[in-house]
Image (cartoon, rainbow, N blue to C red; front, top):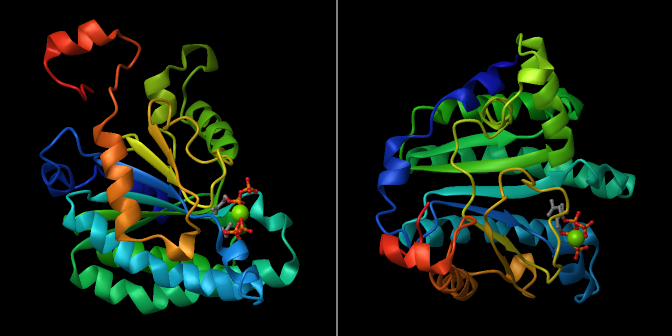
Length: 263
Ligand code: IPE
Ligand code: IPE
Ligand code: MG
């Protein structure tokens, strides 16, 4: 087990949850940041121009969620399937990830944000792995909020690895339970996402948090990721507040608890 994985095992800071006092507000939001390529194309610019604009969009989004009381965000930055893209785009994205960690870590740290990464790090370049490890190490004691970045992340791979990891740890495959499997996922220690937002208009999960999002509310906006901002966040949170989360029960049962968002 790598050092990075050990960090993820730690429980999320209580402050990150305590900050969300209303059950009408999601505790954990996952975002599929899609549409950078189309954003660039509409400007007759190369795809990497869109990815750079996409990176610039992140900070204001973090600040806006934080200001609204949402303190755990998981951002889908690079999927296990994104290696299929043209070599120059993949190389550019990897470079951009490294540069972004270099540029942003100190300020995120100063703001009390804990940085985590989920995904299969083994396939990333050594330097990028080291940058991720350092960012996690530096910010691991921070309790203000959690920024969880999915890099070379794919849910199917995560679930298979979790199963293998559990068996290696001595679990008899026939004794495997949901809780045991969940405790071997990259997201162990984090609450499941309550809300998944996808920009760029596609109604699909693209291998993102398939297990963890079992009961997440889904919000899709046509806004392309570089244009995503406060208005879209308000729309997503308003949508979430209007949902009745039943978790398999009935509306009457939910009404009897007196809470629209019973977990
Ligand atoms: C999402 O934007 C960013 C990554 C997948 C890295 P895209 O690059 O997929 O943008 P579109 O979907 O082509 O517009
Ligand atoms: C999902 O976007 C992955 C990320 C946002 C990192 P994609 O652009 O890769 O998704 P598909 O291929 O359209 O499903
Ligand atoms: Mg896309």
